[in-house]
Length: 349
Image (cartoon, rainbow, N blue to C red):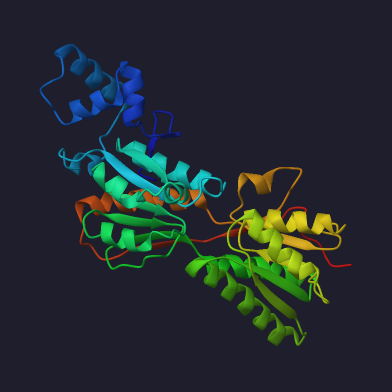
């Protein structure tokens, strides 16, 4: 049975009570519940009794990690993302928040892209607020600053592999496996002219490698030639649109495109529409991240589900544990992805 589950008198599994549940039940704030758990003196007897009564009625069991966190800490952690406009962050941030909330830690969210535009140092801003640790979500240009921060506070990476440091934990999906799933799906549909819109950094390289490996293995097994081409597209809709326009205007355009993420896939969708091409009739299209945009009925984009919520939740757990063991060896969590097949992929005409 999972640690977050309990069994009631009827034998049914129910979610374990959290600090938030206790606070609501007792009619007090979460911070007051935390003060009662730490047995601080500046709490009235009446309120202390209400909190303890609520704990007993809900069967609340204090989290051992939360109890072990130093009382001298600020109770906040920094969360750095590179561009809030990308919906990929939504479920990952939800996973982070869920794990942090369970131990009464408040995340401070900052947008590195916006900070760069206004001339603000993202990492220094967080350190000046005395955060207890930092989670870096996705690829960022602030690599040097993150490396510097890791010398003074615990740092964990979520959805990115850089910077790779001995005491920085990593929580990601298996990008090689995910890109192979997407590419194999297109090959099994019968496509023999495939293109990949490559993204940046190590994650982009891994997804390109999975694309190329799947094609090589298929060609060897089937003895069938497969044409492949790679265009760099970055991470944005604009990048996906420009890269796809180049592909579709070439003498031998692809019949299927595997994009780095859902945003670049949406750019590809626009480029195809501008040329009067139907998806999937003339062009099959696969994204990556399985964001809410991919699941919209009007778009219905086939996409790789990289388990963002789980990746975020695990990253937060890594950071909480690293606060107690800052010099522990690096740990890496890789989530097994799945392919969500929707309306943008079909056999070629």
